[in-house]
Length: 534
Image 1: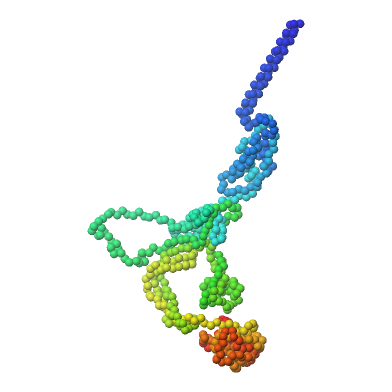
Image 2 (image 1 turned 90 degrees about the horizontal axis):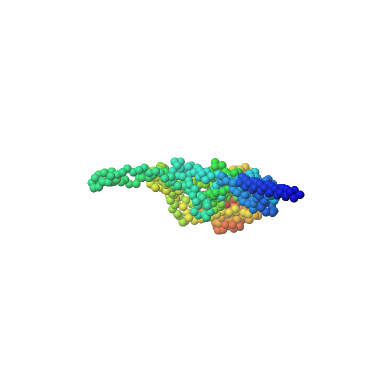
């Protein structure tokens, strides 16, 4: 009995020892496995603490990776944006993504590397790209803006404008920082290209008589200034308008083709300008001066009805002159031969009216050989300065004697009235009437007040054959006005009347087709069209 109990006790001891050995073996294997996993699979994390410890990241509902550090999600997003823009100068705009995470508590589990998460995020951002803004340059000239793709295209555009006048490549355009601006604004400048100078030949030093005899005749007796002393060609170039060039990021659709941009800035555009009427101007002369058809000037100005419309000094007329937005100012020294006239010389007479003049000496053109410095704005001459000339034939100036007294003005001799017959050829309105009308008629009721068109002395007041009752007035400038077909006369011969004074009443006397006023202006005894002088 005792032996059986001992055997039973020994068996239990052996079993306990066996289980202990198995447990130790299992633990050893587990430690080895864990060590191998940590070494071979570092991204597999073990249980750390209670709560969510593994997070799946979603961008716009699409899984982009798994992490164990939710706080770094937006770091990954920032890095993804950097990766997306890397390798380009363009600005890439995407829709702002919706970023969410879901967490879970795990004991064992893998996470994605930062590189994997960032790459996946960048792919989602690229798929949701909204707009790419390309690096460009905006150029502003006179309020006109063009956008070019590169700094080189900007320089090329301005160089094209320069090369229209400097064809030998002697002037080049560069973009420099505008010192007048606080921001990083560039401007375009034109400068002469430095030419490489040929090395001078080495000259041995000489002294005394040897040096004197070595000098040429030109060195000993230099000639006076002549044509050979001038170097001809372009001396200066610049742009007349302020130029602003700034870097920008723009949609590709907003970037202009270089040919279009160059044409927009350098080709002539229709620019509206104002012309101030000068003393002595006529519409036809203005048309010739500005190089614009007379019909176009009339169409641009509401105050003008036709070529006979009245204009006055300092009146502003709208004219359209084709000009480019960008102008190149360039100065050239040039030699040419030409005929030329001297300015008119005036002798002023204080006893004459300013519309009286007499030529005292007829002009004669001169002829000379000239070196001149001419300044242009594009193709328009701004200034010419003669640097040297040889006169081949001397000119003679025209001499004119002219009055200084402002001549009297003339006004319409009645209020209202309908212009019923103009000056010149017409059909005879009544039997015996002239077919060439030497005045103008205004139809008006009998009894309408008639005014003196200008101040002067009454030369005739009474009945005149064909005119009916008529008044003649002599004016200080030698002109005469006539008022015919009157019903009543309020002045007498020899009376002095002032401009606008009532001198008569309109009527229907003499050879007349109805109640009206017939009005004439005579210069040197010859009728002229009154409408050109009122």
